[in-house]
Image (cartoon, rainbow, N blue to C red):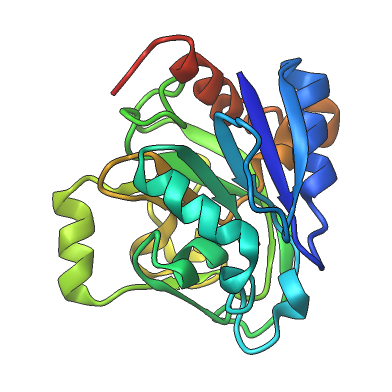
Length: 233
């Protein structure tokens, strides 16, 4: 399969994603520029972390208007696989490809550390190699990771089984002390109703090898590869 990693002005995790795919997964991957108008036949598009366009106005607010995002939205609406990581998640929210919004961290400070997230849904292209309730150790690095959605739409997320990851402790318990940014209902990652678009704040590409402190991020990337080997949900 072929991955595409989009580079926006201000992206700083694009090379991390590229290396995780090329050197760890040994899969084909290429960079896509924010002004490109084609995805060049990519099977899965990655919107990486960083500070697209300097995060002016709001995180992801300007990136949503880039030329490449018109093609990403078309691709996603036709069932194409799209994963947004950190700033990429924020861009997906601003683009309307995922519901909700990002607020400043409850502490009002930038947070960069390893956290634990619990897998809530394994019937997705991004978690099929995981077990339900499995706890993953993956780092975060953001100032605006406090996911918010109204109570009404939270009920819809739960009804449609769209919550994919929640922040937790080492044993998988939902404990406010382990909710690093104050995210509503401990939400660390969600998918769209169709299941082909995923947004997550933790960085799996930064946890793709044990030398980095954890290799749990490989579950996400390996799940994508498994999905494109013929397993459909």
